[in-house]
Length: 280
Length: 265
Image (cartoon, rainbow over all chains, first blue to last red; front, side, top):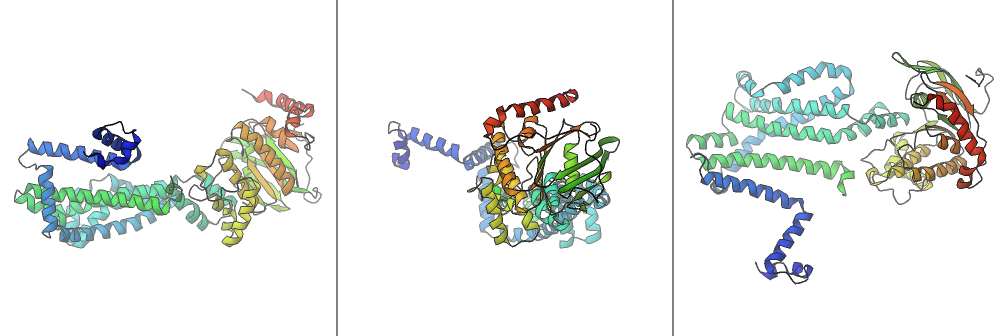
């Protein structure tokens, strides 16, 4: 708590405040301006609660936050984490890519054409409502335990969400904008590419984010239910040898990766596809 | 006075009738929205369609625009029957219909962009009309950064940019506050004078109709029919404040109100 740590704030408070009060002011000022401050506070509360719960302990199999963190660092350094992610990402990326392209394409087609809607909507509504984990053993039965089966598990979870959201996105396009395009003699293609898709973009991306989150669930299901590989293998292995800190570290890391992926997607959307949101 | 305009055939139509509406009927299922509308709109004039809500004035404007098909009857623009939207008509929307992801410049140039005009040329034309509606300096702004009045100026500049003969304005000022509305009406009169185009204007404001129109078509509701046509010969060379206090202006407002009050709740 040195005065030198925040000299400019001493000036701002008229030089009257003590060192600690000026630090409080600096923090208060930072909290007003930056969203990231509240994100940090939120995470700090979560991790503190975790640490306390681990120290109580609520279960002998529940490690503290610090134990989990050191296990994570250990796994990152001894070269088990990266190869595991390399394995996990293969079905995940393949499945998400297929789901995104196919899902957005089918969803837009359903949004534009009643016949496509009648044909496809019931299938995807059933698929979205179905507990997909129950179907994973069927996939194993048909496609074995390889990459194809795991990719399919990802697609089964991600595709319906992306299709149904894309469809909704197109159906909720501002009809006045479509009329506007028609009134200036826009062709059907111009209508779709210059009005419908740009206007649907926010909801398309919301669907894509939900689809990717579902894809993470899919790949974890596949790695836990089909054969243990990648991160699923780390979780299964460390559980079997009662290495709970390492098991939690693997679980926490996949949650963190999933969260960061979704945040990155949102950033890409706002940065490159929504120029009107850029300068705020 | 159910239908004061005599029916004409195409052969002896007045040469300066740029838009002709013949026997237009429109039904939405069991609801009859418009019945037997016959109207002619002269070139270079501003005609207002005025009436209480439910009289079908916006429907009629959208039929003329080719955005809504009529159940029966014809719309003839420049001697040709309308089957859909065309380059000789441009529409100004009540809710502005601006693309939120595009700048003012791109929005104004959008009609030309759809026609495939090269960017430099369409931007030059768009800048001209952005200037005409008083929005210079806002070219790179996005619609959400503008006020309601400014957004509608973008809509009007877009309609002017495509150089249509007929401008169809669907309650363009209804989402604009009163002060801006008056300023807007004055600007519109200046543009009508300068651009020499035919304007069809839908409004539910009697004062607005009398202030801006050469001719007012009163529609009665359920089903929409032409009930009266009024030509408020007002001297527009006078200052706006003088016009708004002019006896002739006030008399026309009163006359229309007497015609419409039977339809008020």
